[in-house]
Image (cartoon, rainbow, N blue to C red):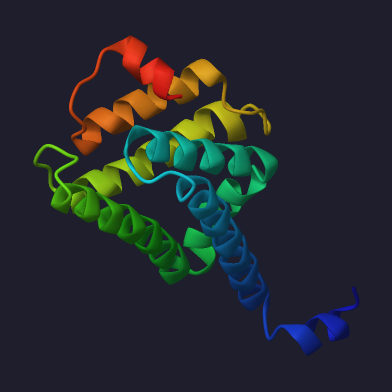
Length: 164
């Protein structure tokens, strides 16, 4: 694209970058919601939501690198991105707490922990492994850890495996 044509559509490279990140964020949210909302709650919802998230990242592994770069281009964009994800997690945890599905937790703290755990796990097994899919045993371990952090009552491993 010629530089003059570029500026017909975007006023700056930062604006283009912002549009890219926001578009991908909306796509990711839609994919994760669709997967999670096929379940009415509980362990299956958590598993489906995170499985969809990790699968999406595997198909778009460069987006996590772009988000990390965004902190230097437009820090408020990255802050907003994380706040949106954490807010969705917090809202879901609050609903589950109100329904009596979880043991007492601080939903906001747990939500931020889940966001960080998901990002670090995706970096380690997807981005740094050049877009490979998260291995099933790693997904199981991640979801098991997330469920415990979320305050789900303990179940034996056979019950958890059957839920998947």
